[in-house]
Amino acid sequence: MSSFTEAKIIDDLATILADFHGRQYSGPIDARTRFFADLGLASIDSVVLGETLEQHYGRKLPFAALLADLGRREERDITLGELAAFLEDHLN
Amino acid sequence: MGRPVWRDVLEWVQLGPEERAALGSSGGNPTRATLRLWGRIAAKEAVRRLWLEQGGAAVFPADFAIDTDAHGRPTLRSLLETERQDLPAISIAHTDGVAVAIASLDPSARVGIDVERLVERSAGFEANALLDSERTLLDALAPSQRAEWVARIWCAKEAVGKATAFGLLGGPLGIETVSLDAHTGILAMVLGAELSEACPALAQSRIEVYTARRSEYIWACTLGEGSAR
Image (cartoon, each protein chain N blue to C red):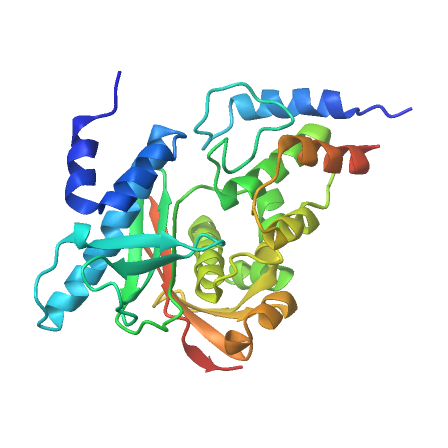
């Protein structure tokens, strides 16, 4: 059984992002919230969030690959649900 | 509380009708909207100054519109001479508290600019944002300079990404700093495989990027020029 469920990870993300430098958004945070368009974060913030999540979960995660994937997207944005799915894959 | 009066005034002076309507309907955070407005003002001002230096007639900023393509790359459009294709190339960047822009009279110039606040970054940040070879370049600097040069390298990557028109395709590790001059602030950057394929015009170049620090901000800009690899 997975110890990190997507719902738990979304909760973790909401907690971390509630006090995240650079955030320009005060509405509710859920799986559909977009990192750039909704939270108002910048590219550099995605690297900082990666580093924050590595500290939070106490392990190295392949954020360089995630950032590379993000750079290839037409929309250049990622929802917290997608980020949670990435984390779930690599935490369990 | 409503939006500040100064922003209404600036929008009327600086933006054309389409831009005003687009900015007004874009919603979102008011801080972001203000930064977007500042960025457009900076870009139009850069263009106006270039033209004035060339002995051109003064133009009003609201006579130009700035459009953005699918990747967010800005382009200038004249509202008075709608057929004009020779308008300057522009690039815009902003971060909390500041907006910057660069313009080149050459419409085909591959311009790019970025600005970030100078912040001490951790080893974890460096591992995700910088290549090992770039960290080796940083190791050669005094430890007290490291935070500033991490920021310069980051801004240079963003500026080069904008110059290619594809942004950080392949992530921040897809652009490599191959040399830095701590005296002049000039960096040489090369594209990785993915960006090289997307932007063959710059694939064989060592792209020169100018970086500088002003107060607590670091900025970098490029004209997409340089020497052959």
